[in-house]
Length: 432
Ligand code: PMP
Image (cartoon, rainbow, N blue to C red; front, side, top):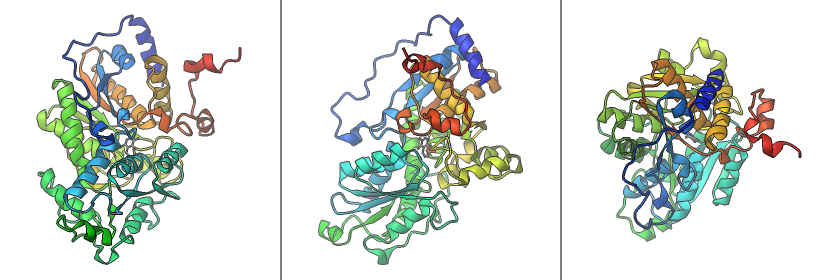
């Protein structure tokens, strides 16, 4: 937080915000888009003025909170569903139900797209996530089941439960979905291996697209989306988010910073950027209690140095939601070979960054975005890049509106003993 205070000072000295070079105007879309899914992706890349001016480095955020479901996970949900449709696992309006285990964002994205395409959804999530995510899911007509947070080896862990529920839905006889399945660990050919991984994630392994609607209707399908292991997650970022960033920066990008929940964003975007320019530095921003920092730095998830921290993520009520994990998912495994560095972000640091951005930029972000931007600052300082005008890109995963009851609640943070800078809203809270 002291580094933020210093940034504040240098920001004050900087009278005028740096002007961006003129580029041809690029509309988000030139045509009328086809329904809600037409709004997904192709998000703007935004210069974070306060941080960029203060550091002398272009800090650029991909505005994923503008997706219709409110987060970066719209891209993933759409791709998982589209791939399942292509493989004949899902067919609209046939009573098929999509099951997913999620801390919220992916569930909201799935529920949104399910509605738009004629599916039902069942979302299983830990019972300690911010309440507004549950409200959004219920408003979207999803069936919601909330369970106590538990370790992945526990049958009642939310992802395991989602898989079980899917396997008991509809035509259960054919269920054969050994998860984390077999042959899709090769990294070379995403489009080929995607087919294998998606197939392995499906509860009805033998279904195919030449079945008639009647056949589909006669046995409703349950589809376990499985964002953590599903290759479609990686693919959407490799073919979408990454190329968009490359185009938007005109190839001028020195570093890419991202947190990891499933690891899909980090792996897909990072690997694409490394493919087009191997010198792009890829770094992970890791919140308190997550094991990814140690995995990247020391090669092990659990480490005595962070024993206290790593324990917390299995427990309840993490301040930062959506990123940080203590097991190696398939999608994070894809990121490991290309991750150059990791930054540990404390809860107070994430909170301080979020308040700083509201105060100086009018930018109201969720907790994982705040972590990412804090990691950008740490990376710039560590590399000694101040004043170089280099380009650092990160993901603004969702907005603060998903986090009123936790990350943006003064009461909640007070109980968690995390200091909050209230100065940005002094005027509205002062009695007159
Ligand atoms: N931010 C938020 C708010 C999220 O919900 C997620 C996904 N769990 C992420 C970041 C991380 O994205 P990924 O799953 O691609 O690692």
